Length: 331
Picture (tube, one colour):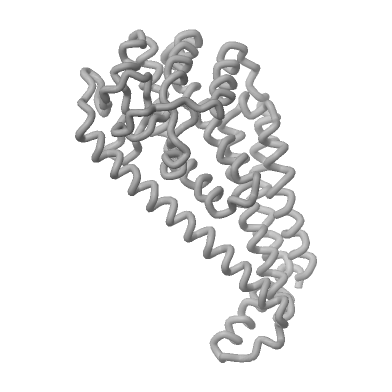
């Protein structure tokens, strides 16, 4: 199984460094945000599986010719309280590292979910005190704040869109419709689940620079997807004005963005009880990308180009499992 472990390790390195960097620097994702989103997800899933699989397969190599027989041998060692001398210290370390990494990723995913749920519950409690229902806008709350603020708070049937009265005073009816459609798109397309997964990836592997690249890229892509939904109801000029107005408003602190990864760049505010709303230059570039994409639209990817990108995503998801089971198929 040695060749499978080395191929998995090579794939893990590629997906952990050059592939995400190349995708984050590419210009085509703005032409096909959904396709780019699928590719980012496949890179994350395949990269994690390759990292764990490489260590696991290499660690179990002395116990069998394929993963199934080697795993059975390892289970016999555990159940019979046998000696691990058959494996050796280095192989035991590889198996332990794979187990710990898998447990770390799962635990971080669950912990991030709990933190987000807790933060949203606290946020919802504050909104019940500091907001009022918007007139003629179902599932929309208005907070008394002079800065232009708009964001959505997921919660299943209790999902709401929150806006400040300062924003509503600045928007025309068409611009208001654009903002509401944009926020509702986040809720209906379940963007918070994507951001939860990538926030967990970044928390689990903060030493990996590409985890930050992935989270930023995905945050920008979901904004583009929501913009595309808003374009079905308003024209480009109206949407650009709405983005500019909302983007000039409050931004979250770094703590809030970590607690709730749905706090989107350029659109989110701290919890309503916090009065000192501040801007952030780090998100100006993201807003500029969205505005430029609307003002100077590029042609969408051809079917062939989208097919190639989606096929690449599918191949990435298939290759690690194939490399894991290939020794058995050939053994």
